[in-house]
Length: 377
Image 1 (spheres, rainbow, N blue to C red):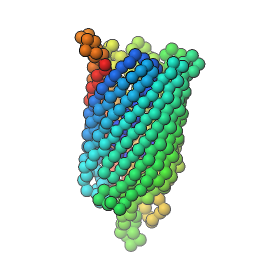
Image 2: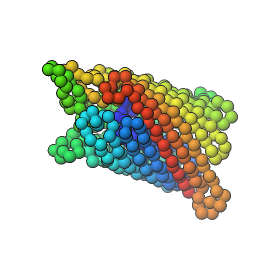
Image 3: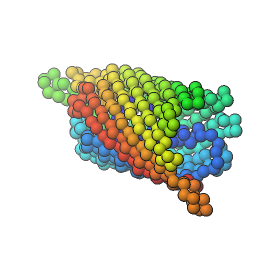
Image 4: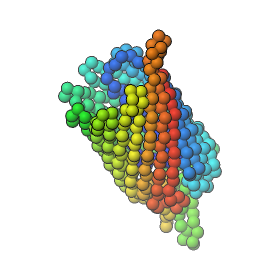
């Protein structure tokens, strides 16, 4: 939920985890339906003009063992190659690494339209390991026109440093999400969401250094130091509306604030078009505006208690333009084999970042592409 995340490899990690989290929440909050088992696979590619490439294959399986129950498991790998200016400015060479992520979730929806769910995620790379557990509760009330939901997640993280077996640090993250979705009329749904998050422990990058001016006129490089505690708060209001015929629109606004002094504003719009019974199209646009952390400086005149050279903690703006196509084929002959449908998904996003006060980079562009397929039985 953070307003700022490291781009490149870490940024792609965050995007991938968010995709998995959204898929899990959708599965957990779905009403009881006919049993359906699904297998899916996808390949995602992130490429920016800051010399970072991320290739992310993923496979997932889900099943409904009984009416109202569902289980899901997925595996994701991120293979990162980077020689970005962030690394060069920190005197770090080009690197290549791989992150593996295993995710499990399960839920049950009662006939009274109450949904409970649990989830577990394990992520590992050569200098970082994370265990995340979560629980969700949702209830439909007022003749199913209002859905209330509550979610909790705790993440335990072990931070290391490549090539240094003596370095070890911990970080814990706890988040609480409360939301309500109200049907206003047959064409419109309003949703409000609040998420609070507390991170405690080592939150700096062991590879990042900052520039400090030497009184004699030179420059010194010193390791990044940030507070051990960070509280984040985000509020989102979203409106879904049936525009006309097979066309739906969504608009949302998100306000973010944290105890490091960052304020963020994000506005988004999405258009969904059911081209045919089998083909669906989505267009989206997202704009993000963010102020800098209170201790962020492009360069420091003298050492301070907290210092960072992370461009994602500085003042920035970003935009995302995306297109997604989803095709589902239901072969008539498939029923004799127990096959319900075959799905194909193609997605592309174009991202543009502008940094107001970063020494090494004024801006950056990136492309994220994804191809996937799924089979339901």
